[in-house]
Length: 95
Image 1: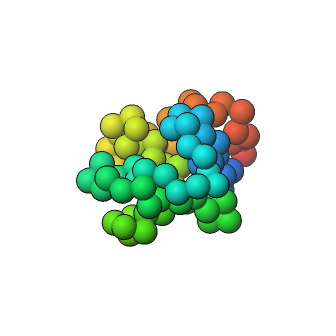
Image 2: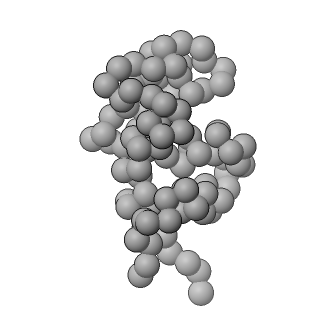
């Protein structure tokens, strides 16, 4: 049987992740996490659970940020989910 993940419970952890692992003040613009962009034009949206760079026009949710930070294959969404659950074991992902 295929395991089902409650993605909607994981997405709101982006803000905490950015603060805890990147030491980012979510109230100010910060350095873009896109390795190809080197601007301080990224901001965080708690409403949409994403961070967005207004220079390179890229948006990231917690899964894409974790994929970058831990060098995970961007096409392996299951590995990204598993890493988020490893970092935040308190997320209730039970059925």
